[in-house]
Structure formats: C-alpha cells, structure tokens
Length: 305
Image 1: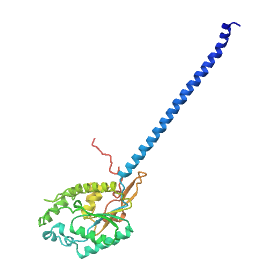
Image 2 (image 1 turned 60 degrees about the vertical axis):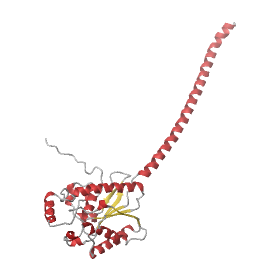
Image 3 (image 1 turned 90 degrees about the horizontal axis):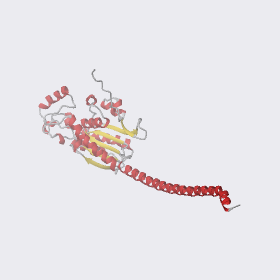
Image 4 (image 1 turned 90 degrees about the vertical axis):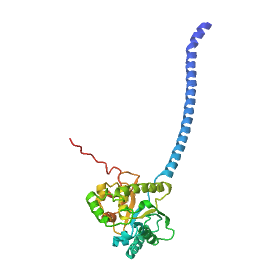
C-alpha cells in the first residue's frame, strides 16, 4: 500500500484522536474554571458570613430591649389634693405629701417589692416635691442595691395650670376646660394636656435611647409622676386618640399602673407592652387601648359622595 493510501486510511483515526484530545483539554479547562469558580464562591460565602456576623453584632448593640415592666406611680395624697387653696400660698412644685400620702407611698413600695421580687429598678421622677417624696418613701421599701439608677426629669412634672400661684380665676378656667375639652384647653399662662403630650414624647426619646444603650430586658422602669402626666404617657405609648384620653380618668393617689412586656400576638418574634387589667379599670379605659398594635389606628375613611 502506498504512503498516500496509508495516510488516507489513518485519517479517521487521527481525526478521532484529535477530537478526544480536544475534548480532554476542554474538559480540563472547564474543570479548572469550575474549581476557580468554586473557590471564589467559597471566599464570597465566607465574606458574606463575616458581614452577617458584623451586622448581627451591630444590631444587637443598637436593638431596643424593652424592660420587663414599665410602672407609672402617681404621687401620694398632697396638701393640694386635700385643699386646693394650698396652691394659692405654696408654689405647685413645693406642695408636699400629707401623712396619708406618705403612707400611700410606703404601701406602693411594698406592692412594688412583692411584684418585682428583687428585679433591678431603673427609676425616673418628676422634680415636684410630692413626686420626689413619693419616690423616696416607695424606693426605701426595696432591697438595698435594687435601684440601678434614680433620675429626676422635669419633663415628668405636673401640667402647669398658671405658672405662678393660683387664684380665684382658676375655678372659672376649670369650668371652661370642661366645656372646651380637657385635652386641648390651655390654661392662661399655663399648659394644655396637648403641651404635656409634647414634652412626654421627648421624654420617651430618652427612654428608647436607654433601651438601646443598656440591656434592661430583666429590669423594671419605674416612673414617679402625676395623674394627668401618667395618662399622657399611656396615651403616647398606646396611641390613644384625644377622645380616648378625654374618656379616661385620673388614677387615685399612690396608684401603680403596670405595663408588662408580652409576646406580640400579631408579629411572631416581637414583643409588645400590655397595660394590666387593674390599671385599665383604674383609668376607666377600653381593653383594646391596653396594648400596642402597629396598625390599630389604621382606619378606612368614609368620604362624602
């Protein structure tokens, strides 16, 4: 067989070998590419894990840890509660507790001690004398070292009715308030409940910063304040309307209103605060106003045709 003939006979074999070789080389290249891709993916996955860990650490540092309890305490009976003429001779901020008021404060302390069973306390207080005395008598009933902080805050003060000594005009102002509406009526040279709402809202900013800065999840925040200011706090927290506020009533002197952290029934994994039933009865408010639901006040407006 001639050389040409032999060459022609071998061509199919050579071609087949070339195809196989090319396939092998291509497969190796593809395999190398896949290996490189796999390594890149592993690196990216590791970086992603690191990013997630960093985000989780940052979230934990900045997350809001609600306390176990937020407890509002109205001051005990004051001389102004017994006789309103006291405000004509004593500045509102200087009115003190009666002996009955001091005992009410001690009783609140014993009630607080039984409820908390040694739980740490993060305390705030109105600067008015009757509130400060209530805090002193109440907190003395707790265990030593149980109070982590006790801070005076002027935003928790009583509604300002006149800004000076009260006089005979106050009776007429209170009559007009009943006609105008207790939330929006502003006393001459004093405040409306809406004004108190504004400063209580700013105080809540302080609370939320504390929640973000400190782990208060096993702590009770206790706030010593006044009847109207306590109701405004609840209005702001639970998103009451002005009508809801105006149907509520002041708690009795020395009363405790307990808000407790519970699992949110509508948002798994989240918590909310619930106002206890005894406080609800004390304030004469509806049950649906006693816990926070994000969309509770989203309503459909009925527009005219």
